[in-house]
Length: 475
Image 1 (cartoon, rainbow, N blue to C red):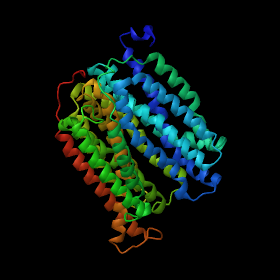
Image 2 (tube, rainbow, N blue to C red; image 1 turned 30 degrees about the horizontal axis):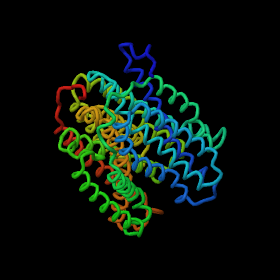
Image 3 (cartoon, helix red, strand yellow; image 1 turned 90 degrees about the vertical axis):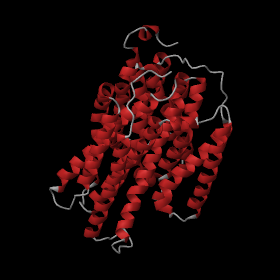
Image 4 (cartoon, rainbow, N blue to C red; image 1 turned 60 degrees about the vertical axis):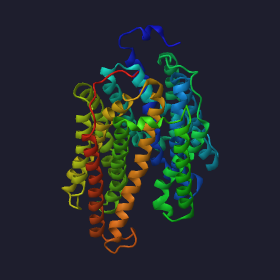
């Protein structure tokens, strides 16, 4: 049983938020630290870069495919134990990754690690929503998002330190002490579940159709630019996505206990919240993809300085997320979501004005901060409004859908940034990115940032359509 001394306190829900923040921080830290270690892993295993990239990709594919089913399972069997078990699986996977003797073992254990991460992410927002009074919900979700932002911010620095002092194995082994603390606190402090556990059955057919459709979609978004949109793996992925998703929609309409209650999408708050959530992360990850290439190819900065500049985005996000939660609890959800996407829009416009001149770094810094701060201002009230629009017995699957939307946004952003840059280079007669003249590169970057700004404008307009109902508890 959770600690009674903590449960009886008026501020008990903040203990729950703090516990969930440990998992949010660790998952974000792991996601951001892995990329900086890939070159070192490539040298250790003596494989090409396109092979070592699967260390990241298998994690993303597994996480995206499982986060919604695990959210549904948590709604049925309980979130507290699912969360604690997810922490345990994540830690075991992390330790096994750190002890891997070859790349095959590492990829298998990364999948196991992603299984644990899916359990954590599917439950984190739903646990916070269920435990927090409605008037504090925005603030609580903002604090949780801030923990994620801190993990993203510190990841490259911690990863660089571990690689310098020890080896790549320690980026996984460092999760062990944090995971032990998180698992213990999860068991002791998280509230017992109130949702009935016997009324509904798990939708195995829906899960069997949803998982491959999501995996195929994320694979297409991440590999299209690298493998070619007409390559055999991409064409097969397209077929799998269309067939499985179509079958999933048909099945979900006909069964009594669906994996995803499609009637939720009839709620404008739910649907618009997920669509704008996808767009917000697409904006941020398009900028995260484009900017390092600009700093390397045009500004000619070294990786250390480039990393410092890129870290402005998660810093802005970390600063704004708790503020956004406070504002949304007092002023409603629409104002901060509109202002957040407007800030991202202005940031992208500023980035489109960059050049090779020295003064351009100030423009770059402000633009990156506005993009990060904009997404940070947008995310907590958006998530709060989506979670507040569903009954308590759908909080888990809704949290899973929100996390799935984030993964889709990440993949869409990478594709958007890379594809638009290629298109605008080709429009100028440049057939290859390598050796492209700097003026042509600058034009392609400017046009790409403007394209992302247009996506931001769409997100602003959709946020303006957001309803602002009276905040109430889930029932």
